Length: 577
Image (cartoon, rainbow, N blue to C red; front, side):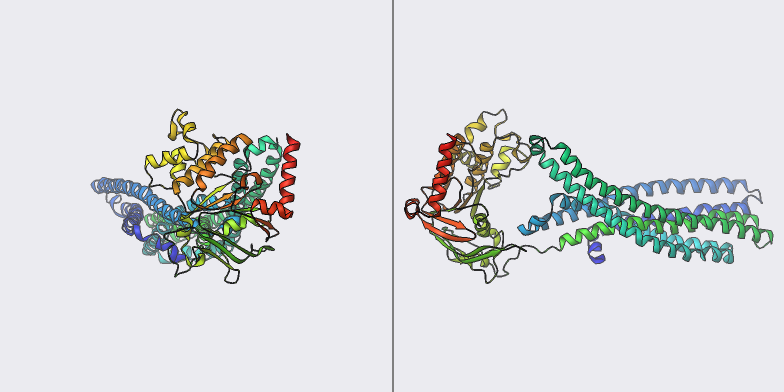
């Protein structure tokens, strides 16, 4: 993991080297003051060399000015290195997320993923900046300051140094509990972020059901967990800081007593004793910095560990010998297809279907029967095992084709339309980003949305809000249809595309869908059976099996499940009327 972390420094190695040089220079300048102090007390003041006293002060002042500039460089460019590394990690993580299979997102909440991209990587950014800087400068300062202290009095220096192992051992044991506490806190932070994301996304449902109090209770549960884990984390941190600070204070007491005895015995003079007192902080301060750095290291290391965990999630499996699907005509075949989700019973069993190019096949049946799963298997959203049957497009097993080339030739219109934050133009152009303005407008016209767009003040540049909240259900659906028109795929999947619409809107949408289906091989999942009467073939999917197949007329004449569903639906419609 360390090697992986260090690799993110490579693009910034020159700037990092300059940052390290500046940091070490700052530390070296810090050594000047006690050296000058000792020289003044031993030489300049006793000899009344006032010129040397003033000159030394001016030199120290000049060095402090240089240190100010170096501090600016370290604080600014050091953090810039961290931010750039954080940015690269975030881009790598986002790119990796795009390659993960559907199953990953089925099992991981958006809020938890967001935490890893944002707050976790912020801690990594802080570690990336302060880590090398603290380790290098503190190590240099410990060595140099100890050497200088030994030049004053080596016995007194060893007494001070002898206290360091106590500080290290105590810190080691306290750090372990702090590490575990902060790991738990980070997990609870992800939990609360997931709760917030879910609650905000569903705020309209909450208001519709007047369930604000329920959401508050749910949020409070997550918040209480976060507060409790934070309490334990900060308790461990307080124990760590207070104990290490006390040991540091003991250092000063030991120096005060031992130094006073050495001075009394005449082993050192007053000037050396004063210089030692001033200089000992140059030794103790970096030791404390290294010890307190453990807290930041724990946060950063924990964040990077979670980053690596996500980066090591296996990507969508693709055959290394996969070839591009080109010149697509759109013939589809399911042969002996079986499928089960992880830890789930069999969803599809021995499903075999064939659909010639340009034809329309409708899948009907009760919810949960496996219709949507069939639609998800065709674009390879979920992968079939080697013994789970075969799905072919134009005679090619889709497992032998590249994922992008398969999905590029399939358009999907779903009941639950997802639109991105942005403008109407942005969302239509998502179907084919390199399309021209004329092609986009033509797609909108064919989807029966252009006339509506022209009534808006900003036209295609109108912002639609999060998930298209400023549009009606029918408008969102037509926008998604325009997106598919622009994509112009050979194969079309309509997954209950009109089931959530009112009758008037459904007619308008159905006109757009009929236009969209022309010349394309179409797989339709429908609950409203009136919309698929003209399908070339209808298949009834029941408990993962194809129980009936035929045209509308053939299935009605057969008097089986399809006729029962059709009669029940129209009886219900008559009752509503």
